[in-house]
Image (cartoon, rainbow, N blue to C red; front, top):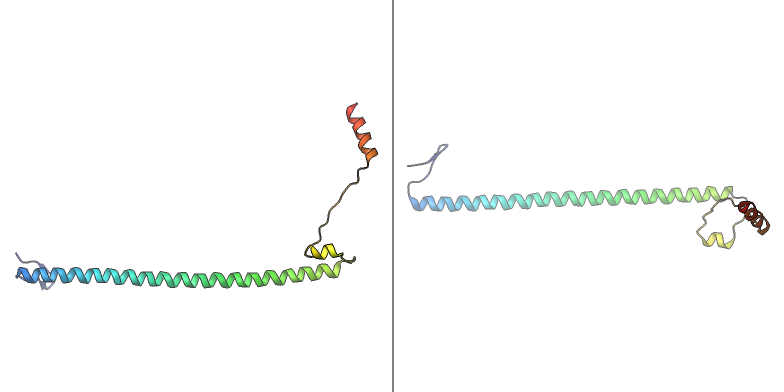
Amino acid sequence: MRLIIGNVQTPANPLLRAVSLILGAVVFVAALVFGAVLFALVIGIVVILAAIAAARVWWIARKLRAASGEARVGSARSQTQFSRSGADEAAGGRIIEGEYTDVSESSRENRGRHESS
């Protein structure tokens, strides 16, 4: 029985059938390998472009943070009325604001008496 695929007939000779089967398998494997290599190449190019884009965004963000940090430090220096001590400059020029309440010994003793009664 002869197999007809489209307009192509398979050969009647068994040796030619075996050779055509082997050649078909080789072509199929070569096509799979070529497709895999092409796919890996495309994925590699996409990864490289994504890394370049991420590095560019990081670089621009770094420059913007540095520029805004310089602007903030410059405006804080112009608004400061007091001169900074050497300790403030050694701490990186950061200003920490806060409030405190001075609790003397006599007020601690009075507070202890009120709580115990």
